[in-house]
Amino acid sequence: MTPLPADAANLVKKTALKSGASVCGIADASAFDEPAPAGHRPGDLLPGARSVIVVGGAQPRAGDWRATSPAVLHSMGTTERIQSVGRKLAQSIESELGYYALYVPPGTASGDTPFLSFMLAAELAGVGSRSLAGPVLNREHGFMYWSVVLTTAPLAADGPEPEGACPAPACREMWDREGTTPCLQVCPASAGGCLSGTLSAGRPVRTFYDAARCNSRVHTHWVGGFQKILEETLNEPDRDKRKMLLYGDFFTRTLWAVTYSSTNIAQCFECMRVCPAAHGLKEMR
Amino acid sequence: MTDATADTTLEGAIKAIGLRAGARVVGIAAAEAFREKVPEGYRPEDILPGARSVVVAGGDGPTAGAWRSPDHRVMEITGYDLRENVAIHAMCDHIESQLAHYAIQAPSLPMHGHEPPMSMMHAAELAGLGSRSLAAHIILNPEYGLLYYAALITTLPLAPDPPLARPACLNAGCAAMYKRLGTTPCLRVCPACLQGTVKDGVIETSTYDREKCHSRAQTYGIGSFQKGLLAIVNEDDAAQRRTMIYGDFFTKTLQSVGFFRDSIAQCFECMRVCPVGRKHRKLQ
Image (cartoon, rainbow over all chains, first blue to last red; front, side, top):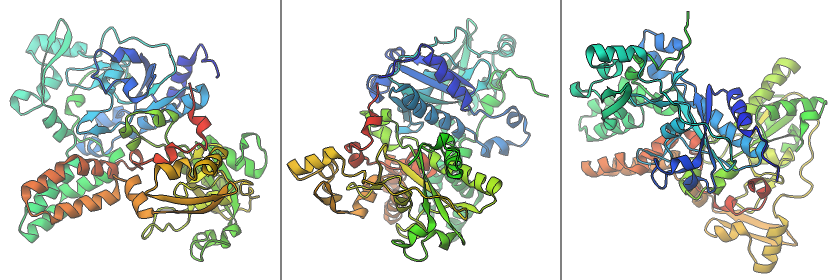
């Protein structure tokens, strides 16, 4: 057995960054014991898991957020690139360090339940914290996509961030002034939206989130869209209307989304579009 | 099979590009070697006129950690890099841009039935990367066991690698088991799909129930989409149809169609018990 290099954690992080991640953090697997339910902890997926590596990146570019056409973000997803980094990292840990590594599938085992919460992993690995809108935000880069690798290698862990990206200073000011924030204002649960929340001692506290509604808006044209039109088509007795349903824009776009899943994953980004902390700190010209 | 990163020959330089692009192994076969066993219409020169060589790349499947997971659903939708395809494109680009010879990725998806325009299994065998196993004829690399293969066809003449001197299957442990018990780990774990006999430590006969194996290996995918859709279309009761459309099986099927490389196969049992390449699955 090859001994684990003293700087193994740094080696892993360097590999992740070189492979395309914008950030990489490490959590101790035992940190999941309290917040994660049984069956969804690192050791439930990889016996003897000691560390959880989280890579973040592949977020929409500043130019994507700035684009005037909503069709850009609707149909130009980038999330798949971060999953490739996770896969590569898992292979690299096994080949280079000689420890087991498991790339956690980004899909769900059943229903909407993930194998392991990537959001919790990102928080525990110190690469982000939950926002009032829901997504985990990184302090430097804002909104990101995540991939998670479990390993039996005992790597030096990072702690959670002492202070999150949310609320941004501008949101604190808006809250003091108007009693709301950009994300709560753009998608209020009280007016057909998904979010309710408050700022308490300067920290975001989400008081309500309509996950089912949010899911159906974020994934307008994906598996759910396909199921919806399939059901409507089969329930439709009129042949001409059935033809319209199947050849119409909605179903056509849905088929594009299903077959190009890696580049057409989400359609609603409104809470992130208006979030001052979501687009990163780097100023563009 | 060669670790070609230090090889300064033309072949070594091409292999090094493939290995750097993510292939675990790279081998070369002569295009003419396909003539012996491949029917006309399915040979490299039928796909690329003037083909002289076939370069084959093998890529990793699940990590050792994925094999170790007690949650079987992890392996069902574990992600693959499919880097062998990237490696093939990197080598094609090099051959066309630097060596001025035609190079294309060999087509491997079925055009009708289960029949691909060109067999990646046979290409891997001829390139010396592996040999057919008792386990559904899956190609086993003697060092790494189960790998996934892609190939390129080129008009560039390259020195071929020799086929394996000794087949990867049977492993010595399996031969001893067969002598003692009349079976092997793969035959024992899946008597429903696999059949075979061994004589003097080598495979004597080998066959498998392809339809059964296929429907188990790919529970979620195009086949289950067709199956689910037919059942849904044939269901007269609207409420029952709704349950079928929104149920876990059809939903997972749609997800697997969309995220193909995250949901390539669901049954790995014959490979789970196979000792070939297992040393790479034993880590700390």
